[in-house]
Amino acid sequence: MLNELRTRVVEAEAEIRAAALREADQARVIADLRAQLDTSHADVVRLRAERDTATASAAQKEGEVRQLKAVIDAHARATT
Image (cartoon, rainbow, N blue to C red; front, side, top):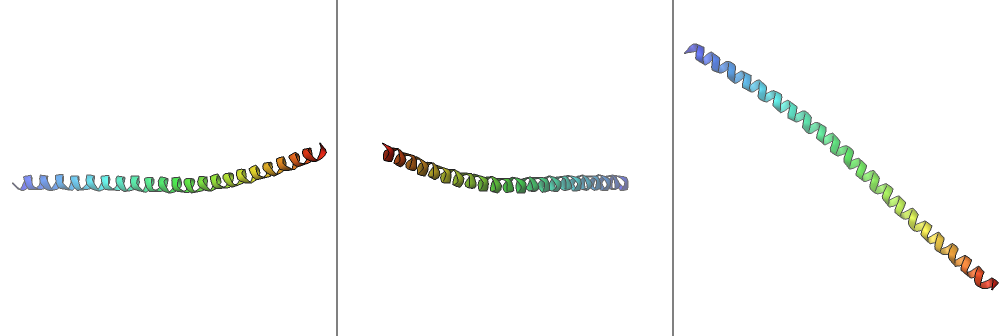
């Protein structure tokens, strides 16, 4: 009977150690995933800023093109 109890204690301790290792592994995985999420979020923020800058630049260039076309058209009308 005493040997059976000792065996159960040893088995329970082994299960506890295994559970602790699984928990530590899960904690590492969670930490890695959080780091990846932070990196991805920073990339999204950066890409949105780049997109907004590119959109503003394109709008400005479109305005400049319209102005130049207007100047060319005015000059063409004035010379004809």
